Length: 283
Image (cartoon, rainbow, N blue to C red; front, side, top):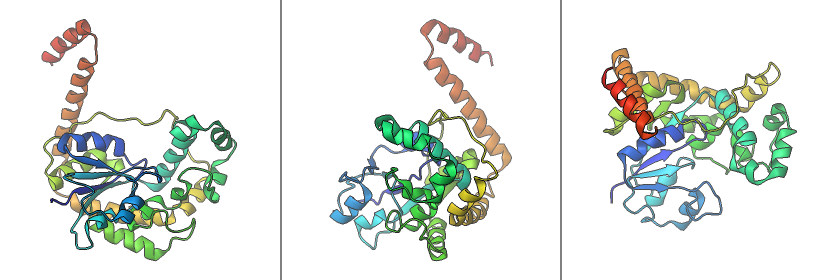
């Protein structure tokens, strides 16, 4: 059995867009559930200890902390892939998505009212156990990459946990959300992908916000370890991508533009599509 690639999808880190590319390059994808009650949730999979659970999967994808490869045995030499994002932007994006677009507020009007009446300072200052996955507002990326996940209380992570996250990150293939196209070129080379075309995926409809002077220190404090991890990740990423030049990025972006035009043709009514095809043929 071939050891699969473990795609650790940290929320709000361009995972939806990246999944488009993953599906182009792998056919057998095992999806780990976000639902803690599911037998496919990471903790359930680890507790079951079934070494054959992933079958012939080429990729194990989902929102789970580092360490899921242990299902296959402690000696498994597993490869992980992930994306990092600037922590304050990631936190704000997650907050806005939860309040306005998530399934949790669509299915729970009382939760929606609670979140609408809660300031961003209150949301990030204290733990709210009745808010889904709220523990992950506390240094989310360190929680995922250290392997701690939900096993430690709100506000309890330490510099040792940060060092563990750094160590794990250094052995991963990873990209940076803010440098997405460069990241994909790096991932293509590292993972030998044959296809890397995508369409931008916009998850959520909430307009971007700018943090106020009172809000920013709260998010910085809640993401203090994540900010250090991100700085470390930027240094590693710069080293990993040093040989990818501007010409390669420019050529890739032109290919993406053409791909987007072609996809727009496919979505048009037949007559309009014919006119646009002819126009594209003259470009």
